[in-house]
Image 1 (tube, rainbow, N blue to C red):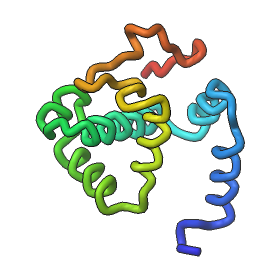
Image 2 (cartoon, one colour):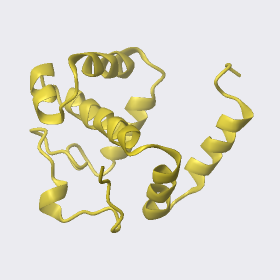
Image 3 (tube, rainbow, N blue to C red):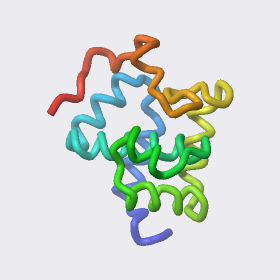
Length: 124
């Protein structure tokens, strides 16, 4: 067990892997993290999707607002990390390539498809 994987982290992992309702998980994220942290993590998922689609760094930065440093770090983790980003992409692409929130061109599908977060908004 590495030094980060403490009993407390194990409890967190157990909770996160057990919650099946997206609204309950969203409420938990709101309680656990700041709005900024949720936005930052969500931004990294958008970045990794665009990297996987082969978009250039400049286009990713323009579409997401992510810094070049963030994009480079996500790219490094995607290519040489522990496999977490690849697993996330597999989940997001489970319905087929480009079936996640981002279209093949990196544009956001959620606004056109009417997806919402169950009435709980990220404001602030």
